Length: 399
Image 1 (cartoon, one colour):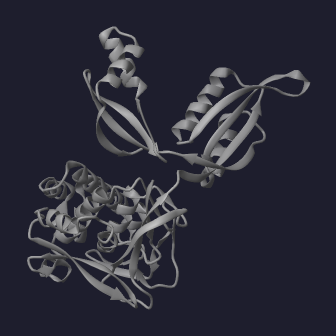
Image 2 (spheres, rainbow, N blue to C red):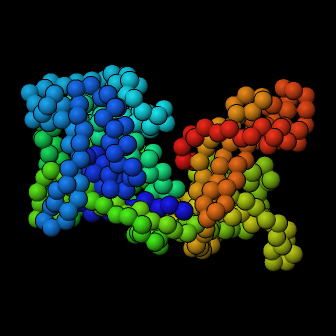
Image 3 (cartoon, one colour):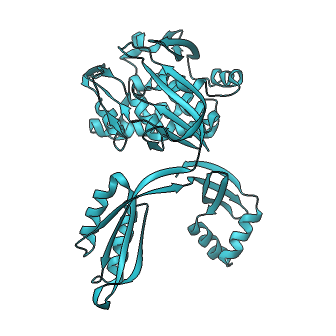
């Protein structure tokens, strides 16, 4: 399994993330030509060797009309809506999956900006983030990830920095309100470094692509690189990226269990479905015998370790239990992503699991059932037909 690991101890910015990937791509000459052919209006993208306090790496530059847009007079006056930006991305010359990821990132930013300023996402006006160099950062990163094609992306917790930063709206605290919205659910911290280390672009990219946060997982490093930022601090200002071969994904999960002998099956079924709707990794029951020979049900919930407390609260709220047992377990899982299968019945949804030399494709049962009903055939016939069709797939992203 190919693992890509980001060291974000100096934050995350779009240009630094792009620079960190450059040395990890193969056929740089061809990839550079593809970047030149993106046709982002008025924008010229290049990568240069540079260093920061002894760390050598790559700096990505996006020149707009021959100059860096952040120093141009249009900096404050640039204002584009989400539709404006999505139309620009649609006009870029790159694979559709790259465009879709870039648009997904901008939709995340628009939602965060809308929430931060009390507006609808469609009414948000991008200033710095709507400029061509910002669009270049996002599209280029998506293209480089597409070229590297890692099976799993892991990152260290994000250093946010501290203090204040000036933007089109004036002087605002670090992290900026929209950045703070984007960081919800991500692992972050702040230390003594003054300045905005994590930008909205960097936060949205990390939120869209990173599967897990923590220390570098066990892997055999094949290549590494550093993306150098334009600002100077008292420590190297860089994002480091490591590409390596690792084993199946291992993660910590919590197993929560309780014994119940005074709930109806209907009520317990409702509780299980509610736990799953709240993104429990699994919820299932077992028939057991309790003291004095009473028949009972054991409810088991598997969740991420950091979410154990919230799921325990849900179990207390929606079941009659008065005690819950907790076990912390290691589990191995295959990576999963949603795909579309081209069949004689049209496109259907499926889930692809892969890693460690294994690859499995399972059509969504709701689609299999629908086809069986529409064609008056059995679900077994539908599955046989799908298997014989060659399984032409379209990637829909990580599940």
